[in-house]
Length: 605
Image (cartoon, rainbow, N blue to C red; front, side, top):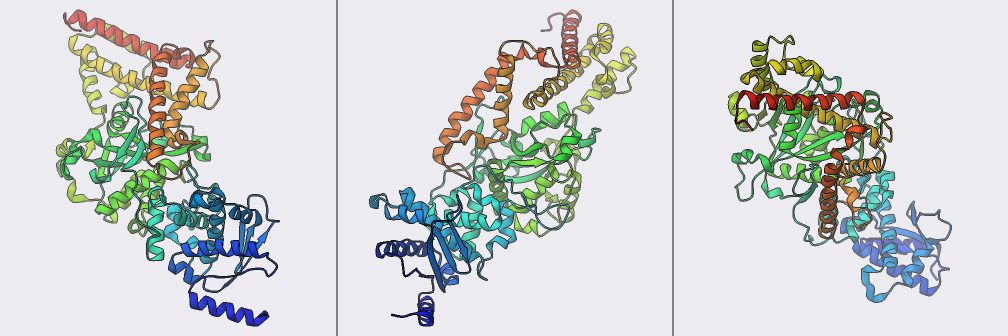
């Protein structure tokens, strides 16, 4: 019998000859268990890429343990492998005709690969858990304010195993399990799959047939279909979309977003796709309470969830130009074809996986947008683009040649016509107010000051307006109503989703429950992973999950529309008295102007 040093020499010779791992089992292991163990380890080793197997070309002592902590299936320490004995029992009891579908066999094989991944990660050839590119993709992002990375991983939705979030080392081990064992890993986590393929010098398997396109859920109440499938082939460009600042403290530096310029079906990719505005998609990181009157303190402490919203361009233009009276600059980025698709792919991954925390300073829209570009594109990751403000991010993109200046028309009117700039409605409102002010001798200096007056103080001028002035004031009162409605929605969302009642005048019956249901449905549109809870799968949803998503999201969208109609007449009782009076007063002003126009211009509808 060979013992001691002689056995070690023999095992080392075998390892060098096989260029792969050789396992030393305890001599006390019964024959049947020894055979099953070698079969399991042989199957695991067979699946390793050659580069991985070669890095483990030395003896690995293996033993089964029954004293590991609950939830721990194995450990790998100093070329020693320990696995939970219950895995061996499951492996030996597996159903032969079930193949890889047998759960017990899958669990044992995954545990073995997981621990071999830890051993590989510690070798000079490994080091994946320290690879900056992997850390970017995995969710341990570069910190914008200091050297190093954030300790918290917020890519927690649709995870194959929450254990991966414990540390980069566990993330690598969990994902290498799925990389080798899941046939559709390349579809669910394509960027990581590509990184592993490049690291090992070859793909783990033949590329699978993935569900076509990238799935986004559009946060739009009136969208005909809440689920939007984006075909990367129809992507023409990625723009940095900047909402200009205003007087509000948290909006003075603007709001940064990305705009995906999507061509209409059948149109060849080219500059004309910029005119297909109804197909464009905006990617906007925002706190899930909207941007209207966000609490300064809660924004500083990260109390708001931050998520990546997918929004139709038209909705974003109306929100900023008509409600907030802010201009929108759409600045094209100088990206290659592959980089454009990489940005869209990373955005889809974040849309389904990311559930972060919004901080005004350290994790705001500018930081999140920079981080998306940084993590999607290694070329941009190498540049000092990090900025805490949206305006600052745009300056850095320009300074480092990431803006496609040649694509932007020099003429201001042409920039508006081609959708590079969306003018705030404020200029139009000022023109309308100038008409009314001159004729009616109004005191406020501009349209903003006029609209800031309480509705009853605006009403006397409406009674005196002639045809021309009444038409101008009708435009202004319509704008005032849009803003009042936006503030009312914000108040309801803030108080009711937070569990706080803003006042005592709450109508009885089921109104509160219906409102909570309506607002919760709105919350689901900000976190699409919630629609797939209870359905097996992770990462980007594939065909079966998309079928369930379509059904659930469409049903919830229908309920949301029906709920809006049912609640509309009853919500006034839940608003604060001040908001309720302002909303009712603006509606009364609009009704008054409508009557006056019908008197002044008979036949006006």
